[in-house]
Image (tube, rainbow, N blue to C red; front, side, top):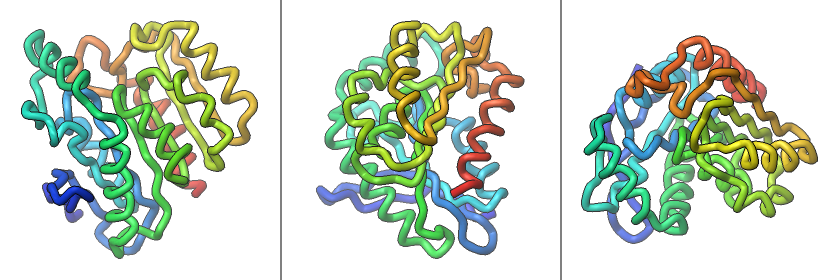
Length: 231
């Protein structure tokens, strides 16, 4: 299964670092994975390889490559402090331009069949939503997403499946956030929202052992794969 660290030419002339994992043969749906504030860590890479083994073409760019403190950060008090600091320095408009570039790069590869979904983890969840609303992606999927309620007025622009997965103990998604998303998704065809009892923020990530939950990970992953297989 071909996988590699590569770079993608950005629109401003810079180079976007990305972990690329491609199927060994054939062409499948492309998936751009947007990582949490900790970066493109081992758990993201393992999921990318897992998807490539199923026939998907996956690109996981570093969403913080423009920051002086880029790359993967350790899951520690200091690492989290640095992660939140660099998240606060992100220019979302610039990152959306990078996302558009990464999508175009993936669509241009022979291992991609021309369809592309965005899959976000934590911080990356808003990009999964905005990719669908602004860039016309073929699906948006998010696990323990950051808040998307500020963007729900753009839901009318979405014409693809959405699959959102939250735990009911997620400190980053208070009940009022989930209620707003539930109300918006209820009026959209193909938008799914799942709430997992006992799920914490980070349930998908073994690199976050305090939150990781294998049962919830497996259940939410299976539902996400059904969406991608239906494209």
